[in-house]
Each structure stands twice: as C-alpha cells, then as structure tokens.
Length: 547
Image 1 (cartoon, rainbow, N blue to C red):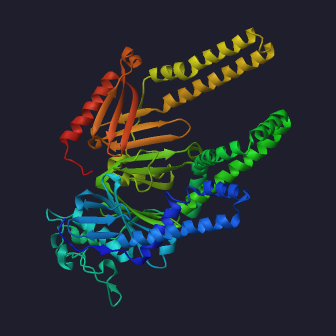
Image 2 (cartoon, rainbow, N blue to C red; image 1 turned 45 degrees about the horizontal axis):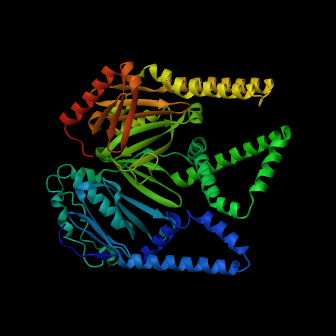
Image 3 (cartoon, one colour; image 1 turned 30 degrees about the horizontal axis):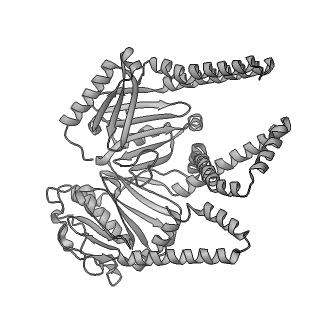
C-alpha cells in the first residue's frame, strides 16, 4: 500500500462497539448465566441485590470504557490500492486488504445510528471472516462512495482507477467527517466521472437498479412460520440453560426433588398425557409465532435489486443491512423447501459466495445470502437471474439402490436385532413378563419399519445431473434441497470408496468449492470418474472465473 494518512473514527463509533459487545459474543450470550448467578448470589446472606446491581453497573462501566479506548486507538486508511486498519486496545493488530481481494463492501445500519445518518462499513475479503474489516459509524455518503468505487474499479481496464482519480489522491485530514457547507469533502474514494471511465463505465454508473423481489409483510411472516427457526433456538437455549443450571442444581441438592416430580408425572398415566398434549400444542404455536417474529425482524422491508453485474440485498428492522452479491464471485445457488413449505408452495434461496465458514457456522457475513418468501412458481425466475443456466432444471438421475441397502442394514436391521436379542434375554431371565416382551418387540418392529421408510425416502430424493457447464444435486427427506453450481467453480475433487462400495463397483464423490463441499454418494464407479474428470478438465481449461 502507498503511504497515506491514517484517520480516526468518529466518536459515535464507541456506541456500536459497546452495544456490539452486549449483543454479539458478549454479555447478551452470557445473560442467562448472569441471571442465574445473580439470583443465586441474592439468596446468599452476605450478598444482596444492591451488591449485584453495583457489580452489573461496574461491568457496564468497564464495557463503556473499553469501547471508548477501542474507538480512540482505531485507525484506518483507504487509498487507490486498498484498505488497511489498525485496531486493538491491549493487543494491537494491523489488517491490510487490497482491492483485488475484496469480495464485497456492505453497509449495516443499526436502529440507534439511523437518526445520525451513519452506517458501519463492512469490507469482506475473499478469505471470509478472517479478512473482514469493519469501520464503524461512518457517514452513509462515504460508505456508498466506497462501495460504488469498488464497483467501478472492478469493471475498469488494467488501471483499476482509470480516470476516476479526478477526486484526488488519499483521504484528506478529517477523512469522511470533513465538511464544507454540509457537503462531505473526500479525496478518496473518488467520485465517478462518466466521461473518463472505462468502456461501459458511464452506462453502468447511470443505470438504475432493478427490483427483482420485494415480498410483503405477510409473505415474510409466512416464511418465518414454516421455517421454524425458533425450534432450533429452543433446543440451543435448553442446552445452554441446562448447562448453566446443572452446578446450581447439584449444589442445592435438588436432584431428589426433580426425581420426585418425574415419578409423579410418570405415575399420573393417562391424566399426565392428557395434560401434556395441550401444553405441547401451545408450545408449538408459540414457537411458530416466535419464528415468524424473528423473520419479520430479520427480513423487514426486504428488497433484492439487480445493479449492473451484481445484486444488492437490503433488509432488517433493528439493523438494516445492505449486502452485495457479485455474480463473478457466486459459487452456488441452493433452493430450499421445508416440509410445510412444500405443502404451501413456498421456498427460499441461499446464494453462496466464497467463505471460510462451514454451513453450520455460516451467517450473513460468511458469504451466504438468503432470499426469503419465494413461491415454487417464481423461484426459477429468481435463480435464472444469477445465471441463465441455473434456471434450467433437467430431470436428475438417482443414486444406486445400494445406498438404501447399506443404510437399512447399518441403522435399522443391526440395531433392531440387537434390541430384540436384549429384550428376549431379559424375558428369559425373568426380568420381563410375556406381555411386556410382546409390547417391546412390537415397538422395535414399528421403529424398524419407520426407519426403513425414512431411509427409502432419503434414497429416493438423492439425485444429480450435469452437462458441460453446471451440476445439479438434489437431496432431502421431508424437505427438499436443490444445489446448482458451475463446473468451473470446482477447486478439488475427491473420490471415496468404502469396502462395501468397492465390492459393488460404487464410489462417492466430493466436489470442493470455495464455500464448502458438495457430496454425491453411491455413484457407479464409471459415473463418479467421469464427473470428476469433467469437473477437473472444465476448471483447468475454461477461462478462469473470479473467486
């Protein structure tokens, strides 16, 4: 990077830093533990609510002091070569990112920054979160100019700036907070000059974004209700609360009490079951409502726009996010239908960019963007906007029936035999009556039949098809997933063969993309080799697509 002036953040940047510590990876995640600890300490004679309150106040004061120190010590620099930041209070670090390695420049605006007309400028590198740079509380105009400059640079000729240097060199003192008559005076990023841009640059600058998808509030609520995000949050919350409560339960000697409650519930028989069913129904309805509310907060005022060679996605109630999806960096597109969504003709799309995070860890900043509230009738039109060939959905070939035999034997037959032998041995030793033995064997048989049906359904919905451009992979059980990606996105191919597969002339294929792996199990050996060779040949011989 060329030498340029380092600039400080606005004093307002301390606000999102402090609240971010409360919200992400900070106190909010530890809130259940703090509440439990506070209740426990409040019941100890030596410590009361006053001490707990003073401790919480001291903790918040320390968090505020840290935020101010972080804001004071943060420095950033933007020039024609890229962006660099120096950050850290105790341990200092410096991150430099050239424009060639920038994946996206996104804007995020929490609700408390809206009155100030300030946003967080998020610069994402191609390496994922490890190369993410966040500059807090910059003026919106400054953030939009940085984002627009990146668009123009990546569409320019060999000189990435071309004639766009009209605005001057590096950012002058004061950076984005410099003012002259209420107008931001910034030398960098440069303002677009259509007369001196590269070929096609002027038309690109003047082109108005086209709205592709803008669901209504009702459609967003329905999307949240059928996705059931709150059920996953409930399971995670139960695990967190149980982990926090376990030491307290042990120390308070509450185990005998819980065992007594459990015995009473089991002993109530039919009455307990009758009381439990309405409770489960109420809980399910509540969780569906919570899922819908989460979707409304997350996707409020959702807009998907086509802006030249990229897509812009804007959404959010408490925090407005303006995300960019570059077609040149798009890795794959996944169409997801939940079980309830299939009945209602609803689905959503996941657009994947290069990321270092796994699918379970993926978030909005990890290269995956979600387009919600689509219908099965319009989803192909949206997918076709990413790439014309993505919308062609030819019939897929299934995987070999050996997949079904293998998993039926492993997860159904062998466990069922072991369970049958076990309960029979207990009956022979006199631990079970003949009637109870019959009931248990019938239960094992019912579970085995259900297992066979699930394995059969899983086998039926695995499928794949390819041509010389794209690969389609289908999977699912009650819900459905269809993943589509270009062959020239494949970076690595692995052919795996277990002893069972070798005996039957089969193989499983793993296609590695920049955002993760795609699996196709139980192919004929010849088909797996042909697909692997085609993917490698295409990625090596076709013109390289930018990652």
